[in-house]
Image (cartoon, rainbow, N blue to C red; front, side, top):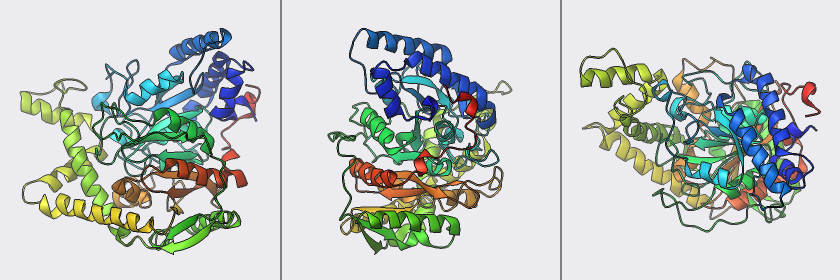
Length: 494
């Protein structure tokens, strides 16, 4: 295994022990980025000069015997809807094409405090609205396992970068599955923390009651390492919860014997591809061998989750995106007469079709005479969905299901069918509505040799248990070690 294919945890120990230098690692990584980026289109912007400078400084501190952070010298990519003071934050939208924030997001500060090397900003569906990264205003990111297929979305750039070994770990955001679904489609690990576990300060808002930032990594141990850095209370985020952060690495190898795993019948219904069903059943057999108890459960309001999500999320999006008017920052139409015309043309020219669709649907759901019929009713059903999970967790320790009903689909295959695209997140959306944590881990492959992900859900703030359960599977299998054919032998010595 080359250094570029190694995990962040493995690399970190080599850097600390002076076996390798961070600057050499970063240089090799950018060589690989130049080699594969034209194929996968994972990044909106990279920052090689600053990354090299930071790596040199880390090496000097290690040479002097100084204490360094948890991610010392590790190259990390950041989804481009997370604010970075020194780099553009575009949300993959023309309306923010040249915007450079005046501050770092809380989690970006945490990365820097722990001596991570930020290598660039990754592509996404515009304003995180999509499930395929085809809705970016700049480029279409491709899946390293098959360049004709999507990487999932909206954190497709982050997932593709990690899968293609051009980032050791990456940050994404998850509003309805936007970390877990691309992780599944790209064959890596993705974690959606509990709502309030990770600060949203500096995350450009899509659905404020749903958004969460989380890790995309090569394996579960790396996910635990990155969670250790980003989790915690932040007074700048009114939704951040003051709950102690456990040591996610400690006890990650714990035995899972005797755990009760719930299998919701609603997640194995019409629409689930047979390949996915077979692989998930095989994954459950691994857990059975480890001594867990498999229990059939029901989450009866699951059938309403997609409808509820697209009312709540779009309503919140229409409110959050009202600020992009061409007055204070971002794109402004040059072909306007008067303020009202400028507002209208700026938004018409600056937003893509999917964002416009969601703004209009959100405005409709919030409009006079329809608020009670749509948004209020959706909010009440959302509570019923949360109650389903609460009742289930009285009987089981975690819930398992497919992450996505299908493996990666072809680029353009669902572009003209929004409903089919929305159903890509049918198994991930309920966790966001309930605010619970979830993880997707690679558990097998389709007949076309495309990755398939297993989703594990747990109670609020039980990320540590999630990581332990996920690691138990990873320890027994080698799916996380599989690499897409994009990885080339010419860099094996890097």
